[in-house]
Image (cartoon, rainbow, N blue to C red):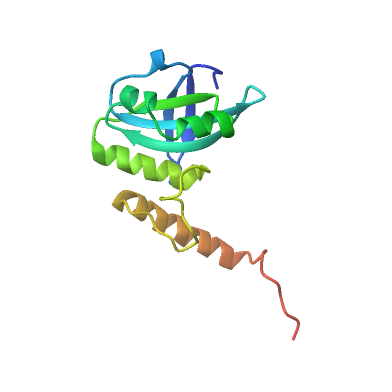
Length: 150
């Protein structure tokens, strides 16, 4: 990991996405894409605070309504941006990252329970496969369940 340059975020599907780290407004591209508000602690611990998508990253992030709260109250130190051209790809990546990272400022796409499936068809397929294998392994190794002696 490079301290100021690039960072990789992992979504719920297990896919990894590369993001550019921007500290100032000058580093914001005008392309469409995904952004993450991040709080950095002790140089290398990163906590995502908010994930969003934009048709123009520079226009959206310069006047974002949640940035003051992220900056002043939650201690956001930087913004990570990644370029994605199509709206469907941006929507899928945003949902994947929100479901995987569970940032505290996002409240719409965070799963509320074990049965809360993704909205996107590709993510839903991966979610069903992962859920099947998780249940299969859990049935073979019942570690978390209490056993009754009857």
